[in-house]
Image (tube, rainbow, N blue to C red; front, side, top):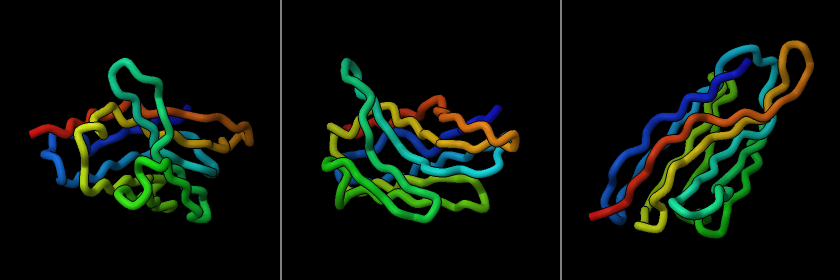
Length: 120
């Protein structure tokens, strides 16, 4: 099994910044893509950003230019640095990882989510 633990959420004023972290642990041989998704109340979960093991990134239009995804492969950790936050960024943020197990089976895992609230 693999666990993803997110941290770094909280309350921030519009225009502020936050940095989210997500560490994967467990029976991991390799992690392929990692990503961040978010779900606002009454809305579907949506992609924010993804990053491959080689560092290639992909962003949703809403995140492009304001958010930066990065990862530390040695620590099995993915980060999301968010700048210029807006009230519409308010959501529960989930990390996601595509994991190759030591057994060579492959699965996708989700974290439990961390709340980000942007409000004055």
